[in-house]
Length: 202
Image 1 (cartoon, rainbow, N blue to C red):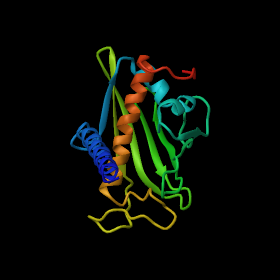
Image 2 (cartoon, helix red, strand yellow):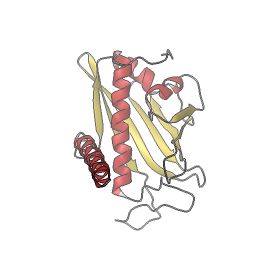
Image 3 (cartoon, helix red, strand yellow):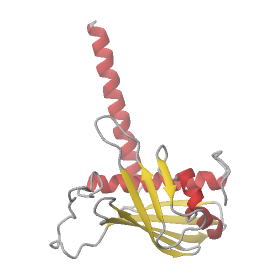
């Protein structure tokens, strides 16, 4: 039976190596400032129509999780995107709420990550669009929310009830940034027709 244990250990090591490699590859795809960018073969108007559309969000945001929006159709400031994270072993299900803060048609959308319990703003995501020939480049940047109450040079700390979303570590912030990269890649695939999704306008 020793060979069975040895094979199992080897499989676990291989999975760990593969996950580490994937993490490093995605991390290296981000710009030095942590921003994620993707160029999509479509006009800014077409890209923004999917980026800032409530019904479209469920087809490319947070793959594998339940995404619900407070509005059907184009999003406006005050709308919200709720993402119910799937439960994993040893960790309870988590809910993230992104609230729309700013919308500039065909150019910019700004979201704020809120906690459900304390309603604190934990992070800000800014998606900017710019035309590049016949294509559009989307740059997504996620930064911790400004906190004038904390001492200069310190990180914002999670409060009771914030769960895993306190952004109290560089690792967690990196995970959000890598997630934004994956989402933009799915948005690109959806718009360019590389992935078949359910028919939701636009």
